[in-house]
Image (cartoon, rainbow, N blue to C red; front, side, top):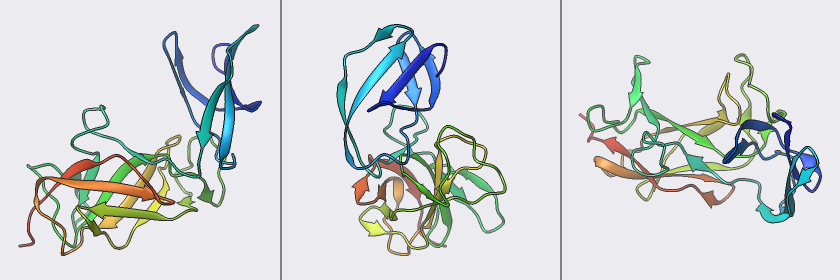
Length: 193
């Protein structure tokens, strides 16, 4: 509950992260089965009409630099010395380097962690389901997805830029969680030196 507002999936409350007169940000409970749910919003005695909402084990989305959901993704290039920066045309990733993709919607973790809480910095909570990263049409190796320390509902997905990845200022990248694709965003990759 937040400021007297509550959102429920078939009666199960969802953790609320933000509420304003025109917007509610919430985290879908991890332990919901793949099914259709009735979403109801309550504020005091007022109750919305139920709205049908399908829920799956994953519904990934990649954060973008503009916040619009398209264009340059929040994809970090991690250099061998640990230096990090967004993989933009001014700082392109290279084959063999690690990238870190900021996402949401990858589902439950192992060990299980309650939604609506910030992840402790000393815990690595890996995604329980299958996670893939596609750069162009090339599957990236060494993929790991985990909840971001200190955050609520944010995941970090790391992968290695493969040798066969396309190069350019706007190379498409997709995160796939349990067979469900995120939107396509971009990152910059330059050929290996």
